[in-house]
Image 1: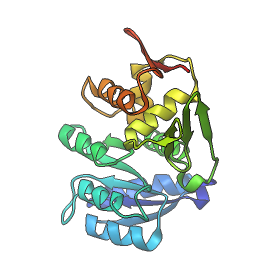
Image 2: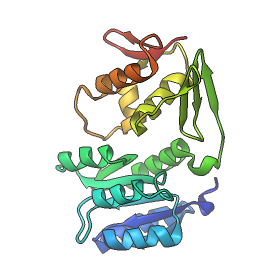
Image 3: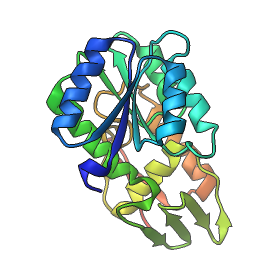
Length: 228
């Protein structure tokens, strides 16, 4: 998808921040629409159907976490890409934002080069509406359809949470490769995301419970891999 076909909604209650982000996005050729609070963000999303929301967490009327929750509960927008803006001190809000269905977050103060890099990486990862590629992975008894967000094990549909699905897709992208914990954090949660030390272990445990113990292997002290 070319940049000029990608529509980004920027939501923040600080005009200076909106202007700063809008300037840098326009310079890269993106279409940009803006909103000043959570309520307006919902209205603009429904009216404009953006590909990506850049959403401040702390806002009047309706905060970013609530906006994300409402969108994830709406069939038309449950898959829209959402990256949050957050201050470094807002650890609890950052975790809440990701748990509610956020795809990434960017910390303030915002660095232009990092902003653009993270947005492009998120758009590549999201491939919303199958615009760039459709990929089906088959590994032994597992079938993963990235476009349909579908996983089957021995023909049985398995219900995975968003991060569990992303983690399974990552491991399955290169069977036999050991993905380090740092690599998994960076690719699934983003390099600036602050999560608990056991986050990956919990997600791996849940994946094993759902797809079976014989697929995901632990390489002690390094990370995880998928073998079939």
